[in-house]
Amino acid sequence: MADKMNIEPSAPSIPPEALAFAARMYDAARAGQMDIFQQALPAGFPANMTNEKGDSLHGANPNAMNDKGQSPLAGAVFKNEAEVIDALLDGGADPDWGKPSAMEAIGLFGKGDEWKDKFEKASGRGKGAKSTGIK
Image (tube, rainbow, N blue to C red; front, side, top):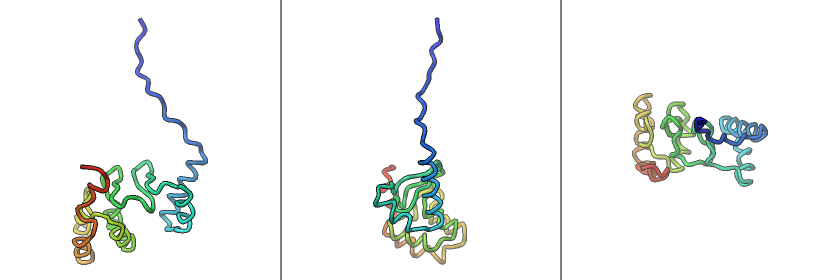
């Protein structure tokens, strides 16, 4: 009697060209090359695309967490990126969302004087779970 084997189908292979394109998009996002996105997004590039870590690109849900449960806003606090923090808040980011949350991160990094008032008044505050569909 033959042993039963539990074989799951393998994921389809991604063409090298697609991987190279995705890498260029992430490099452009990291470098702040908005002109790249002004061309790619209207052409159908998915704004909510994530990499293998769950990190997202420009135009994505500002409350989408990566695979470590970190929000983009908390990441911007960690990297001390004031312009990114402002853009995320303007886009509806929830400073109380994620672990640690951006509100917790400003305490951890001594940025409370700079951001606490703005975080408390953020239009997206308390809406992180709703915007991501997580309960």
